[in-house]
Image (cartoon, rainbow, N blue to C red; front, side, top):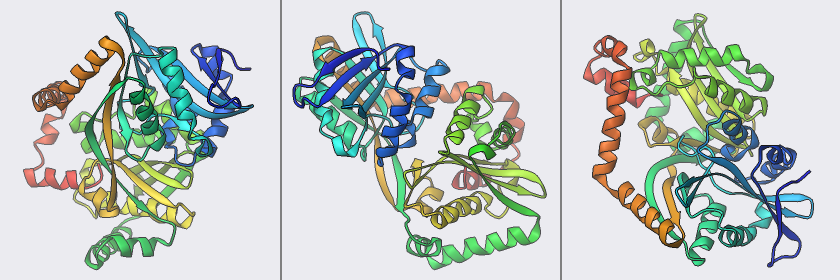
Length: 404
């Protein structure tokens, strides 16, 4: 049952738009959401129902959830999930889940891309928001970029600030073929030699978990690896938290979240948590126990196993996520960008958007923000100082170049 505000499109009499802002109404279109996500072959896993609904259920949003739905008859063809809050008299909106490195925006059936015009119409006519911001706008996200273009034609101002580069590559064939095309002969032989030596010198196992195989126990095992990794020292270990345990579980139950786990002599030493949807592999979280940093490149070897399995199962492309660390550029040469975007409408909205853009563009502001984060991380990680001191500067550089 669909509840909320129904608005018939003036551009296409077969298209109807609906605004839903209550929790009961949101649960009423979950099946339609899953069906739309299955058809939206370019959509990242971060626009799937399990991902976004977990943010709502766990109270990880700033404001009230609001969904703009676009229907063609009884088929859901467009969905714009937002969190909206008021700051004095200004309504501020963001995609649900923004902040955590991802790609967020508008979920659209590729056969109905023109509905971005209808969605832009309803946003302006109903004044859904005065300010829109996102830290996760992909240059590959044509639907969301189209929507922002439409809003600009209706009076919004829009500013973009570069956030990150993402490495990706096309698979669609054998792993050996992909490896030959993306790495030198010397690099390939070195990694193969390390793999042979690793498996020869110890009882090494690599296990792949998906669907019901991903249990709470498995998730606790990978969280334990992360808590003994370089991420712990950086203050970036998070998977032991209940929210992330639930998020990873629901994505696995939807067969989107996969885990590759490496053990040496029955000890968990490294993992990859990746997303698989629409024949695409997207790397999410990874870590290895810090005491194995000088061993046979276990992070790269485990990543190679995940890519090899993906090639064998018919995966067509691979995305290694935010950042251009050495190990990411080793596996994928192509790239796209992630921008922070802010858009404003009306006097107050434009003023706030412009001020936010100037802050984001300010190197002084960014450096100060990062410095404050480092200070807080340092206070939080005092207990790890003795562990940090065990490693030389060269050792730390080597750790950063491997899978973190």
